[in-house]
Image 1 (cartoon, one colour):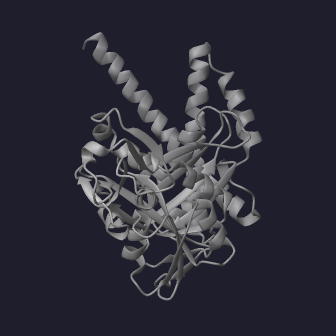
Image 2 (cartoon, rainbow, N blue to C red):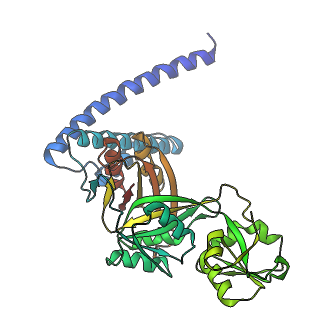
Image 3 (cartoon, one colour):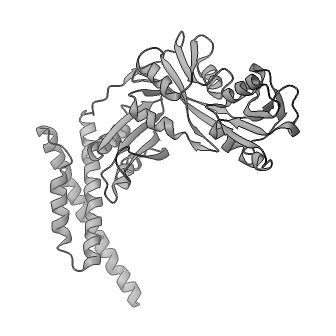
Length: 376
């Protein structure tokens, strides 16, 4: 036997002993959980865990081993908590959620608000999601749409939250935390921008192009081929088309949808100007009612964390450890707190399922703030 083989055998024996001791520890943890269930004590005791880790790391020899012991026992304690959360759920002890399950979110005869004007992509998303049996109206800003739903003027608002080419719509994420509304659905719309001008315009006449900032960003390569054009940002793509129609100047063009051109009597001057063929925008449907359909399969949450090393990993581990598939994560600065962030996470699942409740229970106990934004 070589020295290397002997060392490996010794490591195998040590690892087997570690597994045996780990399982012994988890057996005791289950008994601790039973006690906490009976007495109503919280799973997480931050002061005790901090003191215990401090004691254990000081038993190690050398700085490297001390840090290693600290990391090791942080993980062991995190795993122990996850098992306790599972046992709470198995005993029928669920977190308090104010959500109601419905067979179908009521859509017919609803009043729906969207930002922009007729011909906007948000208008198309609304029509595709709700159909025609609704009352609808438009507003200038996303904030106004959120206000109207909050105060009952509208039942739902349709809001763009991300584009496959230009990324997230950051303002929507911030508004979701400012207003206590809930995501009840989503709609993905294929974005097919064209360059629109006055009926008598030619592409050589163009001096200025206006659109929403994301519309300009999505057509960046096309615009770079025409560097002399002045670029102007407006509130939305359909609004850009409306402006061109109202100004009546053949030197001004808009980047918008073909439908917007038809609504405002404009001519298509250039097609295929967005070089990303899979360009799509995801819209969310928000309501003031915390409802979710029986067929719901995606959950959106937001949480804020202690400003400490490893806290984001600890939060996400609750999703991973319970076998849930995280489909998206975004971060946004917390107003008034320099260099601190809140995180928006989407993952698969439905409220009331054991794995989902285990994950949410863990995040809720260990984050500074948790909000379930919707199940849809």
